[in-house]
Structure formats: C-alpha cells, structure tokens
Length: 322
Image 1 (cartoon, helix red, strand yellow):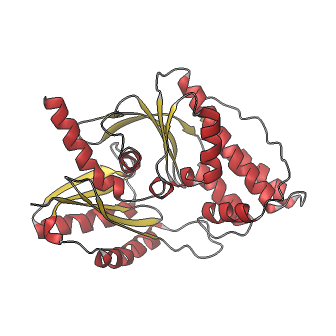
Image 2 (tube, one colour):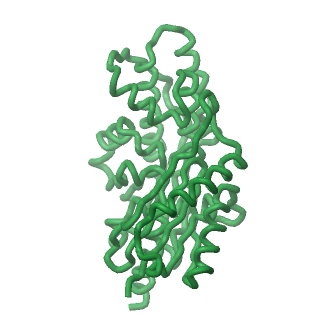
Image 3 (spheres, one colour):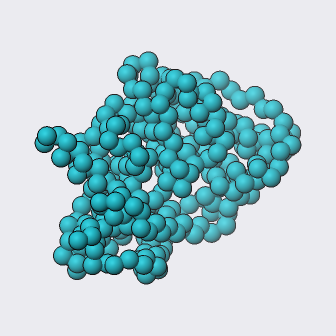
C-alpha cells in the first residue's frame, strides 16, 4: 500500500504544497505560489498574507494529481523556529488546513518549523551521512541566522551562533531594490537586471565589522547614498550589494568556525538562491568546508522539506534503535 506524505508550508511570502512517496522518496507534487505585493510596497501585513494563503491553498491543492487515498501523513510547517513561543499568523493557515485534511482522511498529522523545512530540503540527498555538527545558515527576508544544528528524534535541534542584530540580508536587498524601482520581493528582479546589464563600475565598500553578529542597517544608508549621489548605475550598486552580502556570510562563517568544529555548512533561504552570492561563497570557501547549497528552487520557500522530514525522522529513529 502506498504511503504518501503531504507537506504544507505557508510562509511570509509563499504558499507551498508538496507530496512525497515515503518509500521511493519521489517528489510527486511541488506546488508554490508567491504572494502578491503591490508595486512600491516593501512587504505585506500579516492579515493580507493570511488572506492570500487561504486563496492560494485551495487553488494549488486542486492542481495536485495523485491518489489522495494514499496520503497517510500530513506534515506542516507551523511556526518559524523550533523554539517555544515562535509564532507568525501566516503559518496558522497551513496548520489549520493540515489539521482538517488529516482529520478528514484519518491520517497522521505532524508539525515542524519553517527552519527545519529549509534544513531538510537541503539534505534530501545527504540526510544519512550529515545529521550532526552542521552549521545551517538561514538567510531570507525575515531571517538572518547561523545555526548550530543536530538531528533530534523529531526534526532538528538548533542553537543560534551568529547572524544580524538589526535588519536581515533579505531586508537590506529588498529595501535597496525598492529604492532602485524593483518589484517586491526584489532580489530575483535585481539579479535578472544584473544579468542583462554588465556595465559595472567597481565600488569599494566599508570593512565588515563585528564578530559572529553584525549590523546591516548602516549599509542600507551606505547603498542609499550611493544611489542618490548619481555616481553609479544600477547594475554597479546591485553587484556591490550582492558581493557585500556574500562577504558578510563568509565573515560570519569564519568567525563561528574559530570556536566550532563544524565542517559541513548548509546555506538556505531565499537569499541563498542568488547566483552571484552562491558563486562567491563557493569560490571563497569550497576548499575549506563541505558547502551544501540546495537547488535554487529548494533554497527558496517550499514544502518539499516539510514533506521529507517524516522520512528523515523515520530513518534516524530506526537507526538509533539498532
């Protein structure tokens, strides 16, 4: 009898549904819909995001073409992080839909965090060899966290060991992108513009200060002043911004490494889907660490990791019992 796992993730800006066959580990469905942000706006209010998730969910769910009777587990991202008190209203949409589906189909219901989803989506090919002493970097519009990660009996246990103390990398990119006239979320449109315009002038950015925790709001002012000075074109500012973000990530990794024996580094989240940032990190660090970058699609918000987490848990718990 088939055992399908339905994964659901309703994050700040993406509605995601995935289905995975537990035995073959084949991804049978992977549906996503990015929430709509009005032009000129720098984000969505939670109530507006919740409404869009409710609309998107039924549309995506109706597109899935499988035998729904084979769904035996519903796995949901119900909170941002795997810590007590972690909460965002958007995740209650997936949580409530998941509970209704599980109850209606009389199947298992499990919850994980959005961060665990990102970790699992990065380790789908490596979960049997890499599950402890991992540095997982979650960089997105709402998060810049460097996490010491170990496998737990359910999901992953993580402790923050570095990151930003004010705005996130995603916020820095989006705020400068909005200033330059790009649609929110801006990163993907800025990268496309950079690929199409290569008249890049060299910009020297300030030295990165701080240890494993850094501040970024000052750099928002710096790049804003570059733009308003009219001395540099858009592609030069974008290239410099992406390079600076990559160098910040490298800086924090090296700071953490000085007090940690981590050899494996996962880099996930929407910012990690940026080609320039990925390439620069690999060029600088690939000979020092085992760098794991998920596919660009699975670096961004998804439900594939959430659907895969029960498979990882099952293997880990069976291995521990041997």
